[in-house]
Every structure is written in structure tokens, then in C-alpha cells.
Amino acid sequence: MNPLAKQDSSGSIYFEVNHGCTEGEGASSKAIRDFMLGSRSYNPAYPEDAADFGRCLRLLNNHPDWTKRMPEMAQCSRVWADLVENGNWEMLTKLYYDEELDEVAKLKSLDPSETRRKIKEIISNAEIKIGSKRPDEVTVN
Image (tube, rainbow, N blue to C red):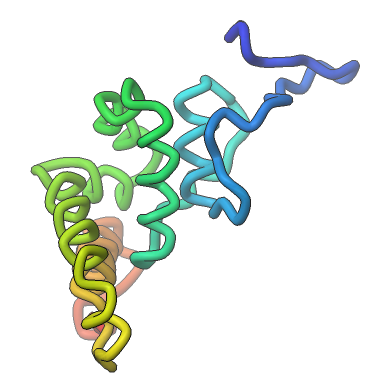
């Protein structure tokens, strides 16, 4: 068992410490944390917008070794696979940090961020692959 894991009286495994997730953590950053720590009971939520993605990046900044392991998240779901494969994670990271540098311009813009748009595009394409959406139902905002 992972040395950071605890086991309750029912045999369920849990993690008692935070391990870098910050206040206001999202489901997708929790999914990364739990997967990287070897939890068998986790929700494979994925980042759905730039705010979610930013929480994932802040977690990974606290655990650089997990950044190298991000391709393993492809095991979690088709959407995770599309997010972390083919350079998509690196592309989204660059977009996120480029947009973050120009925060004033981003606040003035009424358009959704490019990071959010690309995340939605990747998710929509993954959903088409697994058949949860028909191509004519997909919209990218």
C-alpha cells in the first residue's frame, strides 16, 4: 500500500493529508491527486474549463514528478486520454500561461478564453469517439 495511504476499519483506503491540493480544489485536481497516489476509489473528473485546468496545474507545480506521469491519466477515460496525449496537455499549459500573463486583456474580453475553447474542443472530440454525442450535437463555445 502507498505509504501515504490510510485504511479505515471497513478496509477503505483514504489519504489523510492534502498533498498539494489547494483550498478550492476541483474534482479534476482531486482526480489527478488520487490517481497519482494510487487510490482505487476516485472520480475520474477532468478539467472542463480554464479555471479547472489552472487548479490542475497548481497541483502539478507542487508535484513535478506527477507532471511527468500525466500520460498515465489516459487510463482514466477517453476524455483524459485526449487531454494528455498528442501534446495536448503541453499545448493547453502553454495557452493557459500565455493567457494568464495578459490578465488585464483577458478581463476586458467578453469572449471565452482560448484555453477554455480548446479544452471544450478536446472534450467534444473525445465524446464523439466514445459515442456519447453525435457530431451534429457538438458545440464548442
